[in-house]
Amino acid sequence: MKEFALIFRLKDISDFKPSPEQMQERMNWLAGIAAQNKLVDKGNTLLPTPGSAKTVRPDSVVTDGPYTEIKEFITGYIVIKAESIDEAVEIAKGNPIFKSGGNIEVREVLKRD
Image (tube, rainbow, N blue to C red; front, side):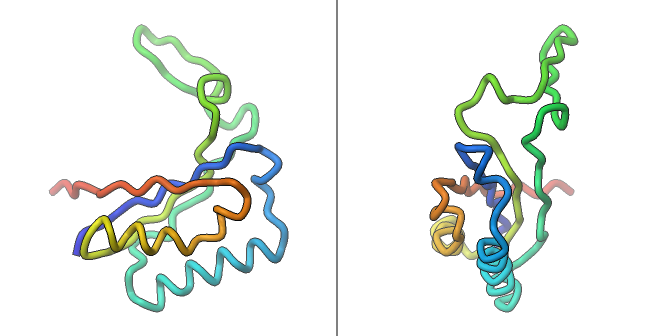
C-alpha cells in the first residue's frame, strides 16, 4: 500500500473552531479510517491565528504566516494508507470539512529511507 497525506484547507477563519457536533463528525470519520487499519498518522492541527506562523523566504526574508499570500489556509493533515490515489480520494470524500466550505488536497507521500 502507498501512503497519502490529506491536507485540510478552509477559506474562512470562523470555520476553524468547529461545533461539538462537527468535531464528533470528524472524529467518527477518523475512527472509520482507523477501523480499516488505513490510518498511518492522525496528524495535527495547524493554527491559523496571527503570530502562530512565519514564512521564511530567500535572503532571510521572514513574513508573518501565509495569511496575506493565500485565499485559503491549511488547518491540518493526516496520513493514510491506500492502494491508489483514487482510493485515497474516496476516503477524503467522506470528511465533513466540505459542509463548511473546506477542501482536502490529497498527495502521495514519497518515503525516504
